[in-house]
Length: 363
Image (cartoon, rainbow, N blue to C red; front, side, top):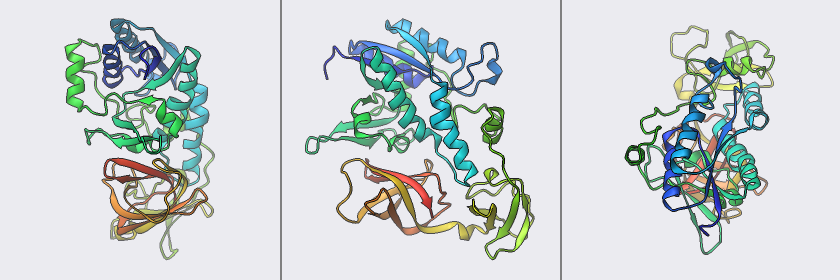
């Protein structure tokens, strides 16, 4: 890559994006920093901010950019974020699904909308503080996605849906580092973010706030109809206020009593029923994926062996994937897996290499 090309750095005001900027600055790369205003653009109402996008975060990002000697801008992307992430997030819950907003944020905000903003100031690449690795496959010309060296911090799961063009324009300088090394670099450079706590869970939801409360406060919660809580035989056990309050695998807050522990095993959008049963009934042998994206190839030539993760916290399980050729694929696990939730992403790996993934349509 030519050192004369400007690289945009997505700066959240945390230590990871700060060290990303510092590493690129060491290479004497022309840089420009962007902090994205995604939610709560409310001057003087800091208590309304979530775990991101606060004035303090933007001030920290500006201090790091000033210390490293490159310009920094705050860009208003609330409309994009609402339309491309929050509204689908709310719609998925309304359909009885368990959404993955972080995947959509990466695909549509950081590496699509922000890339367009970066191009307007002459930057043709976007660097972020994600823990993942990219490399070009000389045989195919594609840009491959790999797990980070630090498995505890690896974020490749959340990046599976990037297009090849998006991966080609992305940089993940932290992919070969461990978190403690990143902190050490920040301390060595005396960056203001060196010991800043990490943002966990959904970054746009305040600590102690429920996702339902967040959606309601922003006018995104849809009118939800009450319905029945039933067992797998269809016997009515109780009532619920709306299916958007329930996800597959949920145990707490069911509002029904029983001699055994009950879990949500299915949420039915059409009937507005929440189906509960014992833990044993949470296990499934496979699932069907939709909107599948393959990374090393257009599509596999036949059944594909892989390790598949069905949520970000899932270690992965051995499975066979069969591509249908119409944007769908079937996953068949060697051993049944627990709580396969429609709406979540299923991501396939061959060792460290991400083969691709899709969205769970049904278990």
